[in-house]
Length: 498
Image (cartoon, rainbow, N blue to C red; front, top):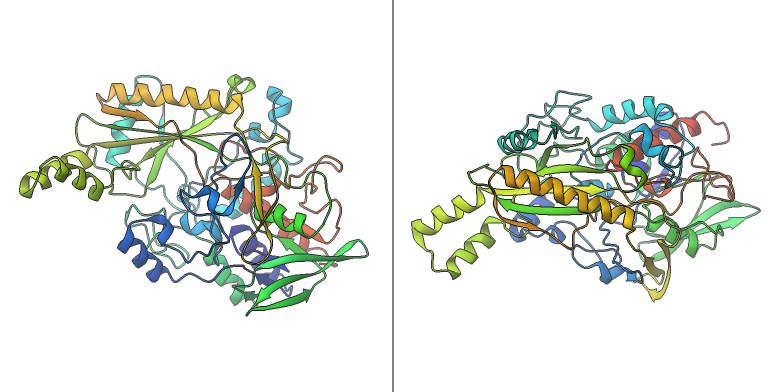
């Protein structure tokens, strides 16, 4: 039984079915029709209008609609409850974790060491890169954009190295999917499917014999005699109980602990150590046109700030070069502002083109440390299914804030060298796509699952996904999620009792 159809659940279900196991995959949300979703986005140009979304999930720019926020800062995670999960609207950057990302405590005296190493995950990283279709690993690199090259020229003065980042986006036709056409709408949707999303492996799992129940939210796990024996879900308006010998919980770092807590599966660490990846967004107008909007939203970046002795005192980070212009400066918005200033006709067209062609965007994602007080618990407020909504306690540490401050200096130097004007470093910056922790792996008495992702308390329950991360690392989580899921599925496929 696999609960969740995102990248972790889909890979596990597919891998187990390929090994001859009978698998039922249960997903809370509906399937996505790509053409319909792309059309909805084209009509509204708003990310939150792209996918079918009910009241029982977070929405863009509305962190309080679903979550009960109790912390110093709001935790602004956004995820999709649809078949294929949140990989529908990720940017697809697929950096591997560094060895040091899993040994923070040993090397720098902060955070926590993982019970596995990058070396342990090496073969699974390679398999994940092939399965997701990573440009720069499974196929040729994507080409750097003109904008990337202009940033690289400026960054070189300070010894910063701009490089093309690996991405689960086809640079050539691969695995039945076309090459990227540079639509610049990776977030919220790739209109042609050149970017990987987990519906790819949902389809492969179905062809291997996996049964999929969509629109069937799981509301409770059932336990007896020291094991998980079944679950309850809502299906077709009815409460249905399903029994199975093995359960893989493949929701995310908020929904997985929420289900465990609501099911009364006790572990004092469940829900604790919630982490995100704090983001610093900075924008400017280049002195000359740099021509954004003609490629994937992120192709290149700067990775040299991920590691070093500085991690004893502040966070590492990755700088991404945005090829999608200003977050609040899309061409229609710029046109509206210019009309208000009296521009019209050909003069308006020229002014919009001149402004949009010079938009610069740099985004740095900074690691966050695990803190026990940052956590998911159960709210007294109920969702539409009668389940407690997630209550979130969250605050950024000085460690992360100091990393953000350093990233602002990097952005400012590059902007200055490019002769940029209208510089703005957003004070309220974050990255709602990255979340981790809350069911972390480690030793009994200190964690929720072991190094093989098996529950310490319920021997036939496994948790996959970024919830098991002991630290957030300096890379987006998805490739590591995929590698861990493939490793877990391989082990289960070889286990007779599974």
